[in-house]
Length: 194
Image 1 (cartoon, rainbow, N blue to C red):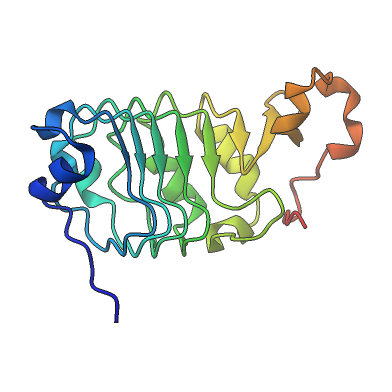
Image 2 (image 1 turned 90 degrees about the horizontal axis):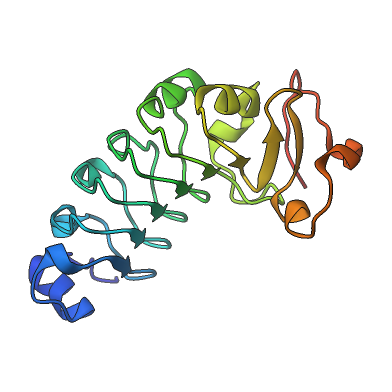
């Protein structure tokens, strides 16, 4: 049995080489068997936090990370993302590969204060590693409506006026979004990308 890692102040300082937690700006702790966030909440200057591929059940102690812009909690054991609603600076959330099953309306309410959020991932573009929330009717439509600045959901961009979706990488090559008619989806049906 693998031992759970305790994210104590001493461990965080030793891992980052910093003398105080307030001077940690980037923290990447992937595949470390982390189950509890410990003293991460004291890293108040964090800009990027990557906790992917761990054993985390709750994000409750992240509320103090007001400067956090990028959060990756993919491939953990989360059934909810309660605790992130006070992260007003967050621009990108990666949470695919969990068991997030909040009702869509509850989830959208959670995002109300997150005015900077632009990218959210609850599943891979291929449809793999999907959270149960992704299979709720009107999931995409509700997410784009609820999150004012949301540009990318699960790797797909949306034109809010017409709700046409196209791949995020399609725009990098300079492709005109109006030319990608084949990527339009009917939101009255469930969408599973294969």
